[in-house]
Image (cartoon, rainbow, N blue to C red):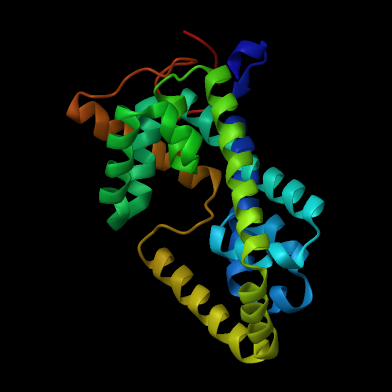
Length: 251
């Protein structure tokens, strides 16, 4: 970011990260809450709202191939560069932030970290989820390698989902027909499940959307924790995290 010669404040960088990430998170919530209705009335919106493989597989037979592949691919790739750049910027602090945000799921996250250490390129190509993209940035994976593997792996993943959808079209249409028939019964159930999940996350302080101030405070806390442990490292493109509004440029 700083190599472009533009000096952005801390809040500006975090805002540029949070806005698209929050939009994507809200889109996923909407997809989960209204999934039966979307299946019945607007299946083409599903690949635009969510990256979940089971959701995409169900709508693959219902959406024209070109539209499905294009929209699903773009949707998959929106968050990946953001988390990669975030990881490059904040290094170990970014990793610790994700670990703390994961709460009880942190053990699963450490498993991903171990896999990444053993076969980083393979993991990026096969499983380019947000935390993997952040790890790629934090461990200084070269941009060319990351984006090549990330895009290739995502194209293969979407292609496989579409192929399976075509292969299993008849049973999948049976499932979607059932969902369509009972959508007015199923949608309240999915809506309540999502509402409960959001309430539970909020109760634990891990809501899917947060403000710049909250993110800033969490990064400061994560850095202090790493400093206490003596394990914090400087991010490749900038200084260790600062809590004020100093501009971010290479030191």
